[in-house]
Length: 475
View 1: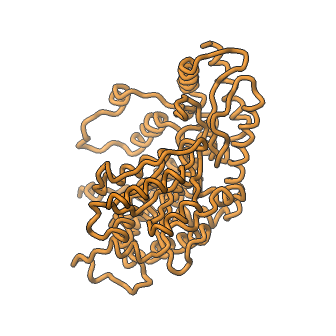
View 2: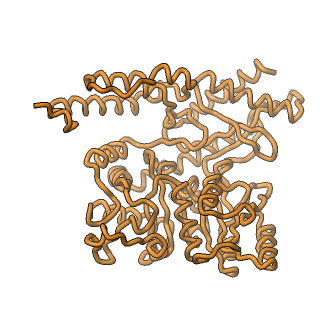
View 3: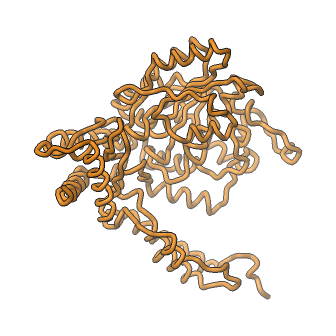
């Protein structure tokens, strides 16, 4: 009898398949420093490798696995590579990868308590760890894990709109700086706000939200009969790692009765270190806070998180009671996380955070974050001691921006922009590192984000030497 419709391998085949998967993952973690972090590939090249019709008949499972290991994985950039400095790298950790494998293998539904009380309980437990870390109210506070910072920001703003505006948000106005992450703009667009309901507040020379300009914007909007309702502050901008003046913004929100959302997707985890906690003073005053464990808490994709001061705000915003769920509602302490956010179907994200924290201990995470911050500051020292490099934005929460500008040569700003852009293109073409540019104060600059605990100062020195060599061939 043909049992192919069951979509199963036999026990030995499953074990062999699993060993092959684990072998590939272990080799990746052990050998990642020897691999190239940068991968090129045009659509035509990828089509030539992968474009086929869906097969009607089965292939040998080993052949499929070999093809993926030989063709798919090598054509993906390695964001956990020690010389992957761009965007926000994803260092990850092996324990969390295995936890994700377990959660996926058991196909655990983490939406409601009845479907998996253990999954819901571990999400409650790990969220409580984070609430304590950020000094949010231990009894009233709440939150949920999301796919990433974008979904956490969207969930926060839906909640803010509901709590502050009700059903009528036609005159509502929201405020953020010109350095705020683009996911906030996307969320605002998704929520149906018009462009004229958003105020982009300029930043000062340190890329922090200008408080006086924020106050002026709120005052003008009130005089115009509009309804200011929310300020989005950044706790570690993507460009520079800058933290907005959180205490000042908190005071404005309190006096003006505005919702205070902090986007800490990048920098929030810095609170684990002494230097980071000092930079993030005031973060505990937020009404809602986004953090991204798949960034600086070393979790694999996908894992974002939203924390709120009062868990009832989430349930009041998102709870729906369709007939097919009426038989699985427990008591109020048995949280159904589908009532706290947008997703009904949710994967078991809490497991990887729980297992890695249990395995390594919070102190190891503290040391890793502190190491990253120190590494960026050491990089700044090297750059300032060089006759070739100019620091544009100093090391801030493990991000530093700089450009090639040797003191023995004179370049125009346009020439410097072109030169630094070509340095980035050259280092990427070498496949030795991933180092891209950004624009600060109308200057093209190179940006390093150093949140990988396996990146060493020698990695950085080698990259800077390579950049200098490229620059000298261009100038």
